[in-house]
Amino acid sequence: METDWLWGLAGGGLIGLGGAVYLLGNGRIMGASGIVGGLVDGTAKKTALERIVFLAGVVLLPLVLQLFSSTPKTTHMTDNVILIVIAGLLVGIGTRIANGCTSGHGVCGISRLSLRGIIATVFYILAGGLTLAVFRHGLGLI
Amino acid sequence: MRLFLSFLAGGLFGTGLFFSGMTDTTKVQGWLDVFGNWDPTLAFVMGGAIIPMFIAWRLTEGRAPLVGGNFPQPSRPELDRRLIVGSAMFGVGWGLVGLCPGPVFASLSYNGWGGVWFLLAMLAGMKVAPKFGMQLDRRMTKA
Image (cartoon, each protein chain N blue to C red):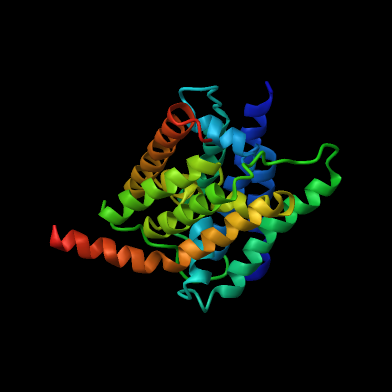
């Protein structure tokens, strides 16, 4: 759609606003993989509740918005469970080892002009682009 | 206050992901698919998110967080193997299905069982990641 970029920009603004609230309010970096990962590997016992409440917000608002939207929201995700599990594992391991994902390294890191954030973003976009080139155009698997 | 702000931040994050189209895997894969039907939306989302965050980082100077404590210190500008290998692994998984950690949660209510499988696999990956990272460090000292 022609207006997609406008929705992207506006939605992006809300994402950044959320990050600003989390930073200026709670003094924390809004990185989805860090917030989840700390709960999973038990490194975040003291801040567990704050993380769970954050994630509840991420899940619940789209749930409510979806109830009021005229067209059902779809993710167009593949139904190949093997592919889903492999990708999920890679995303889980990769973001924890790199200590950040699209929100932490991308949004919060780049806006801070952090070298690590910029390098991480370059590498995951390159790897993602290469994956599409190989698995879609080379092998025709995705 | 801390919990309210957490919910508010999470809610804004989820709402932004919902409206931006970033829970639609075709848009994410479209951004990465430079040899196909390339979709620039993700760049607008990134740009739109970086602007308020850039201002927020400026506002941290000489201040303290609303609930007290300190702002996070800048990380040491180290570019180690963990950052590169981890980001590359993440990128491959991101490209294969078109989901990253934020949208996994934002789309949980309308992504069916596939979304649940992805979430469980991601959590399992996060659980084993510390061990994987240590393996990586060991190889680095050997090399």
